[in-house]
Image 1 (cartoon, rainbow, N blue to C red):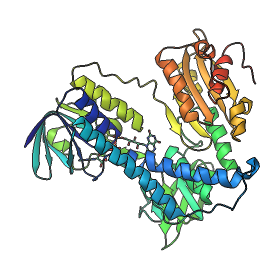
Image 2 (tube, rainbow, N blue to C red):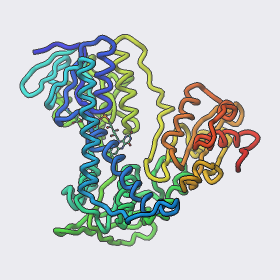
Image 3 (cartoon, protein in one colour):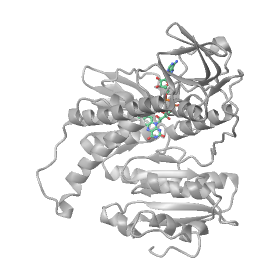
Image 4 (cartoon, rainbow, N blue to C red):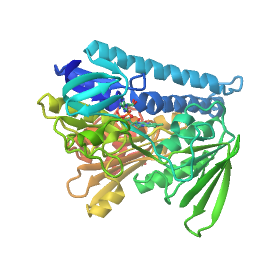
Length: 461
Ligand SMILES: Cc1cc2nc3c(=O)[nH]c(=O)nc-3n(C[C@H](O)[C@H](O)[C@H](O)COP(=O)(O)OP(=O)(O)OC[C@H]3O[C@@H](n4cnc5c(N)ncnc54)[C@H](O)[C@@H]3O)c2cc1C
């Protein structure tokens, strides 16, 4: 039996970051992880493997579509999917091993096995009992599915199966037009699949800025995506090698069928608390399975929860920020997460990124705002890389000029967004950003131009 200040259950971005921060703050800490590898969903079957496949497939696209335009001639590239998957696994293994190294460096005890909270202050792992003044639940999430859709992870797959396909499917049907579905759809579209996306709502990427959604959908259509929106999937029938997806269109109630070689169910994720023993210790969980918290405290003293298992966006960086904040709070510091400035990124090409309020949200709350927009066609650096599609948009308060949000579709959008995040954290105005000298030629100049467009006007538009 060992005694800790903090035991964290779950070694994903919420849990491992919390563990390292606890150790840095002088707390005796252990992290329990059952999957045999650290890094959670993010490193093993989420952010990192999907970005590896996006990088590889984007490179293939560049080689087959843009290299010759720049005078780079040569043998036509072809796809060896098994090798691509090996590369992806190498990236995953390197990153998960990196977390083990960080645990050793910071003297975090790594307890391998599935943890159960047997009572407040006590975690049992495979028969061993460990005690702690604080327990942090960081058990993450798992894919959710639809009634009438049975997963076999071969023909009907979740994102986990989509990261492991052994053959590029001729026809891929993606159920759900959210971030994960569009990213994985992009991977296989670039590798040659015909991709059909079926979405219940009448727009893709629900919750994002409406103008971005429309422009993004057009960009994906040009890449060969077919969208069936306003459609409720009724079920999936499979044979040994194929599937039929039936759906009902909301506009006329008609029933339709689309055939596929692989169906990716990307209808979201749900909190994971299986086997944790929350019932017996009395930790409150909502009807949707979300662990209820107030400043990361559950209703049971000494038990905390962070990341996907709690409310809020299911994003790795949100989990990480909560991990740090909870460690700091336990150590007696003022842990803080600014939920108004959490960026969201879609790693397609073009990339999409956003932070803060959308135009729709500002209209709903009745805030008067101004819009500064700049197209990447006016950005010299973007044009050098055939990446002039899309725009950067900054929303600022009509009376104070304070930046309220930013929405970008274009090259490196996932990097550019952080300029606005920092500006928002400092309560900056659009003019502050516009008066900041930006190096030329960079994609970042588009952000300055969008900020200028909130005032007297952009220069290059
Ligand atoms: C395909 C895909 C792509 C994604 N891409 C991005 C992206 O680009 N950017 C982004 O921000 N987010 C992305 N996400 C979401 C991101 O992965 C999650 O938001 C993030 O991993 C949540 O972190 P977490 O620490 O809360 O939980 P998780 O990462 O899910 O980690 C929880 C860990 O707890 C372990 N565990 C559970 N129960 C127990 C137990 N009883 N005992 C011991 N261990 C236990 C699990 O094995 C797991 O390893 C993606 C997700 C997917 C599926």
